[in-house]
Length: 108
Image (cartoon, rainbow, N blue to C red; front, side, top):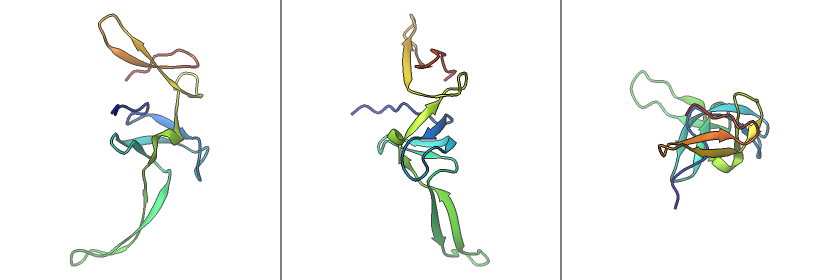
């Protein structure tokens, strides 16, 4: 199985399906084996924690849960539109990601 995703950590993405459809955020982490991403402020889940040490408080924590990478789409920084990722291969063999709308090459 191919261990690559179209989304990388630090990308700006928009959610295209699910309860958070239309929301934008920055990718915090990528799980290649599960093909999931964690996006800042998206797919918030509540977690109930108990105090583990003396003096520590328990409570309810709201944190981001992973969602499938196929549910998010990259946002191009130059044109500002949601776009698919294309690839451009240079003469030295380096593979660069590019926007399919405006053909702008991303810096990563």
